[in-house]
Image (cartoon, rainbow, N blue to C red; front, side, top):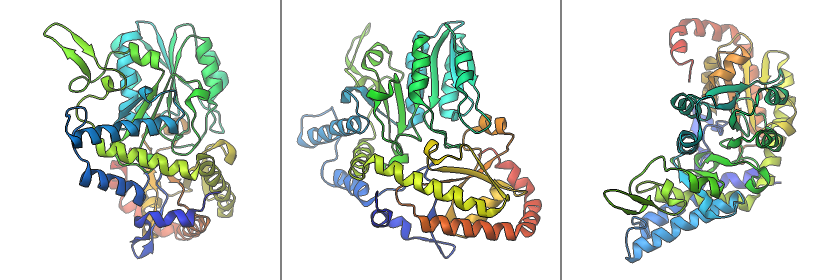
Length: 427
């Protein structure tokens, strides 16, 4: 098992106080904090090696190019890709999924084809495919969920047809925490002749990831959710599919040669990395992956599973005043707890928790259709990572008990700020 108390020493921000209380950071599904090692790797690059890549024979450019290419190799190792050429650096998961939807989708989708998504999808996976399908005259279909928050695999089997060209889904829900059965989805999709696109934004930072075993055709994930800087992410794709795709964004560093009449595209992955990239971010991304590999992703998973198990146990002490959404079996969910306190607006709960120094996310978490499917206008979401502890959960539960105890006062405040709450309900 990892030692969260030792790990916390690498994260100076965790020493902060919020409203006079020690910071308890439970918003890791949105983004994670950065260890000293990542910040130092970026500082070292800017202080001693900074230059543009692939554009110069001088020493600094050569050093920067080597560091950036080595970063691709590290990320390839992190997900056990066959080659670093299959790893395209992107701005984030959203950027990666748009590349697939437009570079693969616009070339391969035809009128009458079907794209199968899920009700639990994040907007970043849902909306690019909806746009691409609209442009090509394809049809979007959605796989439902069960009452316990699992993907409805029977519904998946019923809705997939010979017209299905794409099955896109989240490996782990950013609201319900549900960990989907990737191999089962892949088997169903591939038997129907569809490609499989996996949104790994929530899974790759928290679960051991092996693209060779998963069997998916594309996997997208973000760096900032796994200790790396913002503006970093990756798209992994099968090499044969990437080579057939037309680059989505074109320009500098995507070509080998250009005449007035023709273009020869660059090798993989550079043809998909247009313009000067986030070089320092890519180096920080690799350093974050090294940090997690030293800990061991199996240990990351076990730690979060224990935190979730403990949280679910402690929530029972709230005696029906709180409802958790999604599977209640820790082995089937990630380190995400979305909940509501009875008769209190989620934003009121979140803002009150902030007064205790506890950072959580409130709203619809870029998953509006899922909330509507659940009959909700929002939830409070606590999400864990490697530096969170059992003691923080104890403090969290005690704070919720005090909120429930003062519910009448908070309800009065809610009535006074009803207009403001409605304005930000969709966040």
